[in-house]
Amino acid sequence: MDLVTAEEMRQLDRTTIEKLGIPAIALMENAGRAIAEEVIALCRRRQYNSGNSVHADAGHGSDWGMESDIVRRGSNGGSVTGGTGRSIGGGWNGSSGVSGGAQPPQEFRVSADRALTLDHAAAEHWLILAGKGNNGGDGLAAARHLREAGLAVTLVYAAAPQTLAGEAAVQRDAAAALGIPAVVHGRDRIDFAGCTGIVDALLGTGSAGEPRGAYADLIAAANASGKPIVSADIPSGLDADTGALHEPCIHAAVTVCLALLKRGLVQYPGAGAAGRVVVRSIGIPAALAREAGVQASLLTPEVLQTRLGVDVSRRRSPEGHKGTYGHVLLAAGSLSMSGAGLLAARAALRAGCGLVTWALPAALLPYVIGAAPEIMLAAAGGGEDGTWNAETAAEVLRLGGKRDVVATGPGLGRFAGDREWLRMLWEGISSPLVLDADALNILAECNYTEWSSPGRPVILTPHPGEMARLAGVSTPQVQRDRIGLAQAYAVKHSVVLVLKGSHTVIASPEGEVYVNATGHPGMGTGGAGDVLTGMIAGLLAQGMDAVQAAAFGVYLHGLAGERAAGSRNHPSALIAGDMIEAL
Ligand SMILES: NC(=O)C1=CN([C@@H]2O[C@H](COP(=O)(O)OP(=O)(O)OC[C@H]3O[C@@H](n4cnc5c(N)ncnc54)[C@H](OP(=O)(O)O)[C@@H]3O)[C@@H](O)[C@H]2O)[C@@H](O)CC1
Ligand SMILES: Nc1ncnc2c1ncn2[C@@H]1O[C@H](COP(=O)(O)OP(=O)(O)O)[C@@H](O)[C@H]1O
Ligand SMILES: [K+]
Image (cartoon, rainbow, N blue to C red; front, top):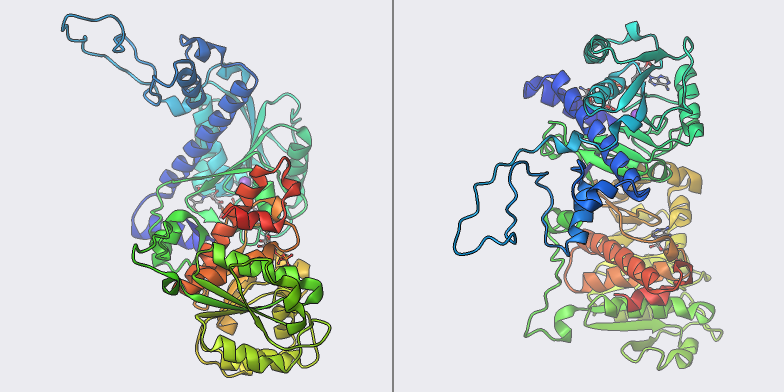
């Protein structure tokens, strides 16, 4: 699923309208219809949750909705198929006692427009907050469809209705011709307390900066009302590209994202303000996105398989052996942070590589013998206190020269001469390199683009603090536009960048970006990143290319976190080692 900026979306709108000849009003109609359908779906969920679906339970009501189908299925032991609507005039259901070879009577089935049908529709009264641009037009179109479905709607114009233009003005006139009641901000009283829900169609991809005047007032009042809000395209007040929230910003229960997923909806804090995000097709062909040069996508199994060519089933050859699956060299751990090396080494094995050699300070070795018997240990010299030193570079280079992947950083610590140490590895290791933790902190102090490189891929896996040091900005600046920053950094420095955190971003040197959606807040625990480093190294060793290994590693790491969190009594009990066991 592609992720677009507001500007990219505008281009795709234009291409659809001008090159394909689809009228803008048709797109707006589709948008309005999609928004109305999602409002109705929300009303159904609400009714279902508050037990109002008793009709559907009894199987004789007029509820034709999705949730009621689920209820019917449940009450019939799964034997009734849903999704076809209520049948009228027929009655044969295969168990009605028809016998003796008699044929069932020909069924006569008529289905209503179930997506726009709602039980107790008259109990609903929605306010449609409409801005004066096309986002407002979408809301006005939705109002007509909702009214058609029997819900009461009141239009709330942010600006005088006569200031609307183009397609939005067409929608305004259609609503007026149908006699849909309308109020105007600043002129009329707006009864937020009396409504059952709010459509936010104030600002979409054309918004710029903080909501002003009437827009700000209406956003604040909508949030304060406590009523469920369905946002058209994006929550008004959200930066569609970065996920930054202006003040004020709508906090939606549902966001009906139109045509293509906007970047800002998958980046925090925007992702938190959007609620449940539903992407709805409105007639803009999704295939246009790649043709127009869109480079970002959500990391779904489909993207992993078709776009990245990852064999997600991770088939193993019947004749394979440990040599088939590659050998990782991990240079990590020090006396006070030995666990970081152990976690990374074990995670590499669990990711499926054949062999892992863990190079570590010699003084540390006696303490970790037997901690994970599957791991080979290599004493790399270092200080008597179990720390690394500059002289260890030669041994790491020697060991790394024979391995399929070299990973370093977890638990490494800082030491005199560490910049030169890292430079020797960077220039001397010809297999793919994974750098994390202190290796990144060292790198941040070096002008490494001037280092010579044997032309192999490098994967950097910073958390936001490490990213800030690498990019020379503050951590809040990193978080303000994670996709944009990761993309720019990866291209400029010719690295594969994994910017960790909720919805980890993976960026390639060619500017391709993938945003991960697996994971769990329980993963905010020491060592979780070390596990990821090991996993990515383990996948690289098995022959994946750097982007494949980074993306698939992040995806699997998130899944493991979800699984591990689910297996504890409480997710906050999750520790990094649980994720390795959940692989
Ligand atoms: N054919 C298409 O293009 C399709 C578009 N579609 C839909 O259109 C949306 C984009 O529509 P859009 O480009 O008209 O912009 P939109 O988000 O309605 O805002 C513009 C208005 O807001 C105002 N305004 C801006 N910033 C403001 C602020 N901070 N505070 C206050 N006001 C502010 C600005 O006022 P101005 O600055 O001009 O005074 C202007 O009046 C898109 O998200 C999708 O929903 C779909 O239907 C598919 C087809
Ligand atoms: N709220 C969250 N949702 C999803 N993943 C998370 C969340 N918090 C942390 N993580 C993941 O956990 C890992 C933490 O890594 P890091 O900060 O490097 O930890 P450490 O240095 O202790 O190993 C990263 O992969 C990050 O994406
Ligand atoms: K909106």
